[in-house]
Image: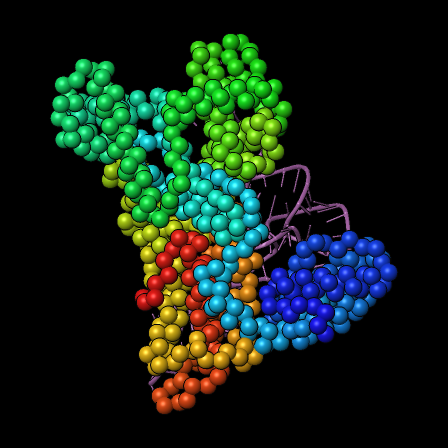
Length: 558
RNA sequence: GCCCUCGUAGCUCAGUCGGAUAGAGCGACCGCCUCCUAAGCGGUAGGCCAUGGGUUCAAUUCCCGUCGAGGGCACCA
């Protein structure tokens, strides 16, 4: 006893188990590589204990011993770890670990005391990460695809921050090129009641922009044609960008940086970026054009930076933009792109390598498209924007919480079909309500406790009283949260947090169903009920923190 | 032709940095409120994890082939 620190979290327990393994290795006079981080699993079946390790199976080959022999040596040592009540060998050589209820129960107190910081960690401490997403043209409202990136990109950023990284979110404004001119021409045509050019922008919002511009500045229509065109284009750009920014703020998606492609050119950043790559020796000229030799780093063909006519390509901007990000000291640049851009992955990574960085300093997440249906019928038409569904219309219909949650809860690489009727349902069918309901339910219990004058926070907490099967299950799930957050951050998969919350909510509902928390009528408050109040508070805090990572509200009443 | 993503219950989808009997919701069927939010809980039914090989003590998970679905292969933006 006393050789190991008392375990309170799965991480601590893993450290103690690893120490036990090391001790066995030295006693058995073996030379073995033991992984620096030993992972404990949470078995699916409670019959297999609170935690399980496959370490005996993993070491069997190198040790030239049967897994069961190793397990038989390890199990007694693991059983001695303070807080561990049993370590049993099972199956081919798993060691199933059971904690005593006082140790596990302690988790509730730790969570309540840690508060909003519960779940945060240091897995990514010291990393400077840039997350770029949406990056739309400022020529129209944001659509459904952008909405997925808005929700997921923002959640990724939040999860990375929770894991200790230093994170900036970034929106690259594609405000250069012919599409801006088409946009300007469309708005100007509308202002003069002319037919919008066939290759222009056709949505009703064009007319709204034109009308707004003319009202703000009636004299604009008197300007010489060239000047007038530029004025319309610039005014429409400003209005449309502002509209995008407002919609995103309402969607709780905040960007730290809005970088304009135009500004990148005007500040000579593009020239500067190309110079840097030239200095690295990956730029060459052929047929009058300037190329980047991306094939050195896994791209299928080299890419043109400056066309034979002297114009910079879009790729030149991208390249310079990457150099710019690196000069702003971001170590890792994450890009969220639609599936139609997956051809960009290799060239973007090659840009990093051409700049003298590692390929994996660029991470590209490719997302599949989103479709929405209403009662099974596909919804396509937008009143304002022609044949797309816009972010603001979608959110108007379902609300920010349901929109964000239902977009985040799936891995981005799976195509998604959302049914408007389903995600606005107030039932089990709709996971966001299910999770929020659990939070509201707990808030209600705590509110009732306060009304009964129960000051549970100042009463003694005895975690050992939380020994009911459902309490054990709930405590174990709560203890998983930091691992879930760290995993979501490392894998850039915030949907894991959502799935975890659904699981946690379900476990809470089951606990609630079989464990009475508050005294009824004239009953005396028992120490067990006090412990359960701590457990409720810990669950509420964890659900709250989790929803926070997704940018979804945690209501106290529903 | 080459490349990317995907193929899991009737439907919508999780799971897979290899682990012990493959999960959830919906839909179907059967139960549970004189009691803290029934927007909840319990139970029944439903699967050759597309398919054929390989690696492994162990494969739905990793590797290769096949079939099927979607997307991409610009001196466009």
